[in-house]
Structure formats: structure tokens, C-alpha cells
Length: 325
Image 1 (cartoon, one colour):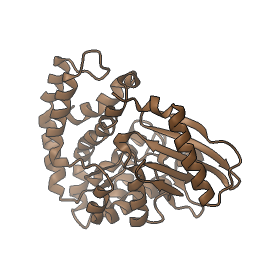
Image 2: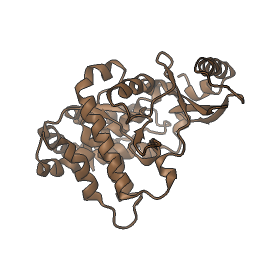
Image 3: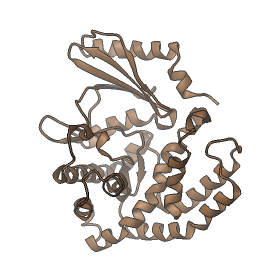
Image 4: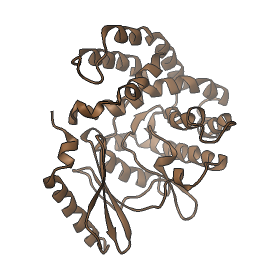
């Protein structure tokens, strides 16, 4: 198995990426004043930086399982301009993205306020309503699909795969654990039926919509970025990360405006289903969205050594458990 982390730490890869970064900066008229440097290497992506007279520039390459982000981002910039952080340049073949420094992410700009939270879900829904009409275009850019109607079969296939892994693999499921997950599939079947009954069109689902993946433009607009986890799926699953921000991480303190946040998002779909129907289906949509979160990890595994998963077992498997528990 090829190990993408080892590849990214190799001198040959660094030289190739640096050559593209420097040539691209020169083409854009950016004056480089310091060498290209590693910022972070994880099994899902690598980040490099280069300092220019015009400011810091960021380079990103994803794990091959999420290499589509470069092409997807460029398509989204065209579909929803002013709501997506635009790259300076991309190389779609390599999945390379070069972006100007946009300052601190939303999480680093102080306590999250309710108006900003509502703006976040409004922005997400606006992008999705526009993107829903461009499924062929986005799928051609490499965006994977995770249809709600296949969620039960998907979980069954993943459990069977995890049970077949060698017992030494960090994600191996023994027979008892596998049986426990499969026994919960009727709950997921009910959730799928409720989500499908809404009749909403699939769209791009960011799949990790938290305040670390949002910048604020100088005029106050929110700019979404980091689309490597994205899927083409039921859009209401996008509430999963904001929902967890409020109910698990407590980002807004002891009295989070959860219902107001949910309604602010759902209003964008109320021409297709009633608000009562939409509200009632949110728990089911969050249940189904667990399959989408698991998929973001599953598609990384072909290009990495399992040693990088040590310590990740519980967080990864928790997404499967959330669909059936």
C-alpha cells in the first residue's frame, strides 16, 4: 500500500510542489521573499506556505481520495461567486490549490454570535440551492455521491468490510461489534424513508461546516472553503456540524439558539416541503449524514498506511454507530 504521508515528506515531492508554487507566484506577479515551507502534514492533506511581498500564500494537496477538491472549488466559485473562497490558482490534475492568506478563520475571530451563526447556515443553503441545478457539472469535477436511498446498503457494506480487515488493523470489527451495528439497521431504514419522503434535491454537502472552515471577507460576507470532505447528498445533512457545535461543543454557551439556527437553514427549502415536515425530518437527516462523515475517512484509506489511524478508531467508527444507535 502506498503511503501518502511518506510521499509528501519526500524531497522529490517537495521539489515538484515547490517548483509549481514558485512558477505560479511569478506568473501572478507575487514576489516571493522566503522559501516554501511545510506547515502541516496529515493523512488527509498537506499544507505548504510561501511568504511573498504581497502576503502569505497557502498551498494544499489532498489525499487522492479527496483530490477532487481543487476542481470542485473552481466549479463552486463559478456557481456561487462571493460565497466561496476563490483560489489564486489550481492544478486539477494534481489536485493542487494555491490560495492567498485570508486572515483568521471565523473560529479565531472571537466568540461566535447568533447573527454570525445564522449567516453561516444561510450562506450554506444559498450555495446549495444554486448548486442543486449543477449536479452533472459537479459530479464531473469528481464530487462523490452518497445518496440517502443507499444509506442502509452502504452501512451494511462498510460493516462487512471492517469485519474482514486483519485483526491488527486499527478499524477491525470483531463479530460481536459487527453484529451490534447490523442489528441497528432498522432505525436507519426509518430515517432514510423520512429523508427521502421530503423530496428535496441532492446538492453539494460541505460535510464539515464548522467555524474553522469559514473566512470573513472585508465586507463581512462569509466565505466557505475546505471542500475536501464534500459529497453530493441530501442537503439537510449540512446541519450536522453546526448542530454538534451547539449541542456537543457548546460554542454559544448554555443556551444555544438551536431551533432558530435550524429554521434559518430550513427556510431555504420551504418552497419544496412545509416547515413542519422539514423540522420533523431533521433528526433523520442527521442520522443519515453519519454515513457521509464516515465516507470522508473511508475514501482516504487506500492511499495511507494503517499506522496513521492509531488513535482514530473511536472517532471514525462513531459515525457508523451514529446511524444505527
